[in-house]
Amino acid sequence: MKNLIQVKKLTHIYSDNNYGIKDITFSVQSGEFIILAGKNGSGKTTLLRHLNGLLSATSGEILISNNPIEKNIVEIKKKIGMVFQDADSQIVGETVFDEVAFGPENLKWERKLINKKVESTLKLLGLTQLADRNPATLSGGEKRKLAIAGVLVMEPDVILFDEPFSNLDYPAASNLLSLITKLNKNGITIIIATHDIEKVIAKATRMIIMDDGHIKQDGVPDQLIKITEQYGIREPCSSKLNLGIINWAN
Amino acid sequence: MTPFIYKQGSSILHNLDTRYKFVIMCLISMGILKALFPALAIISIVLIAAMLSVGIKPLNSFNHIKYFLILLIFIFISRALTTPGEPLFSVFEVPVSNSGIKDGALVSIRFLIIMLLGMIFSHTTKPSSIKSAAEWFLKPIPFIPEKRASLMIGLSIRFLPLIIEQAKQVSDAQKARCSDNQKNPVRKIARLILPILKKTFQTADNLALAMESRCFSEDRTDPEFNKSGYEIISLILTILLVLILILF
Ligand SMILES: Nc1ncnc2c1ncn2[C@@H]1O[C@H](COP(=O)(O)OP(=O)(O)O)[C@@H](O)[C@H]1O
Ligand SMILES: [Mg+2]
Image (cartoon, rainbow over all chains, first blue to last red; front, side, top):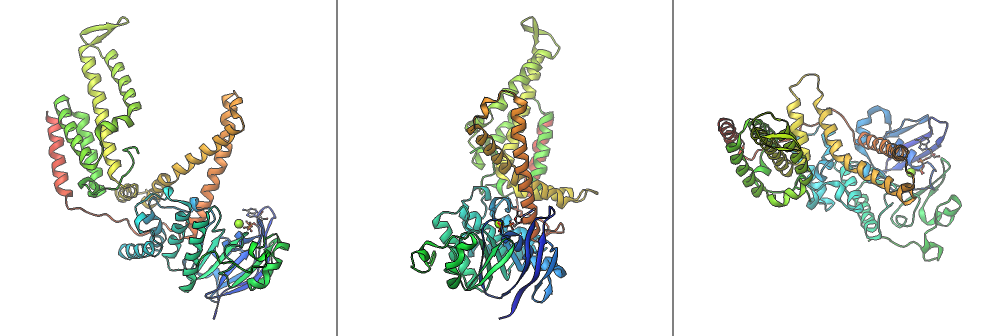
């Protein structure tokens, strides 16, 4: 395994002297499935936006495959995709098809290639039937899938998810989790930021706990699950009842 | 569903290249503005046939433009009352002339037919191809960044409904807290506008981030146009039709 992402002493101070994140150091290996856990305001979103090159650090640095992130920012955004928390405001296209084509059009791919890639991505995610639909008319789960499609079509190595399960009902959440697991099995590195670890913990290979802008714990989910509540993260019910970790999806 | 919204279909008009459809619509509109009654009868028949062929029910569609029809009646009345000419009868001492009635009818029927034309166009054309066609037409015009313009068209089509939805949510949330008690309309609007603006800016911010995260660039792949093969013949028929409209 090789170091895909290295974060070194990363600090971000927002304009009004608010600390977003402080002195973050960790690295990500290719193929990992990481939960970035933490209560609201702990700095998860800020960290993810740095990894996607949307924010620039106050101090510290990020290396992607040993190159500084600033060096080729477009290439980084293509390699490291991001699915935002609010699906409604990240969908740009007027139809499902156009939405998925948006990224490749920005990269100025040939129209033929775009059509081919969009079709295969829609097929992979089971969205082919919806290709001509207006995204506004989709269900919450379908919108989330569409947001993933828009990122996946650019063939990323890593996908960052910011609170992907918020506002999803049980079937949609479990469906989404199976999809994310499938992507991980296909070799895509996954980082999921969430305050609600119950749904994902069974699939994760690693859990990083953030609090107050710092990384407080970094380890195997099994070993951290009992101490999450001291960082304001709810321990999964099954674990509380000493039933271990229960799978939300197959 | 209103017939003004694009609906998937496989009619000739659905498949026609949007750029040709644009040109055809413009030509027919210009023809209509010059057309007199016999010509208007012809174009009405053509448009009703077109409506049937793309799956709009003509009678049903009148239901969706009833407010517009009221406007037309107003136009008709004001034309009838203000056009000078030989008085036919008078309403409250205001003389109504034969030529006034004719003129009013002509103007309102022309408006109505252009409305139907627009309805057929928007019913059969994807918003995204309208955007692409606009980009194509703007391309040769200097100093207009056509990619940016088409992006703006696309984003408005996409986000207007969302903003309206948010505005409705804000208004409902305030009604739930008895905002109806506030009688001063200025205060009422001020209370409504601020949260709506805040939400809209927030949405715009998120959108900008999401676009940036997907490598946004103005140097993008050009739009694609699909030809159905009926473009040239449609254009020729349109020109014939417009000649008939003008000459009759
Ligand atoms: N745009 C911003 N301007 C100022 N402060 C911000 C901004 N975004 C986040 N913060 C602050 O940074 C901290 C971390 O926030 P965030 O990364 O959103 O946390 P999380 O995603 O874990 O809820 C919070 O204290 C928050 O108030
Ligand atoms: Mg967050």
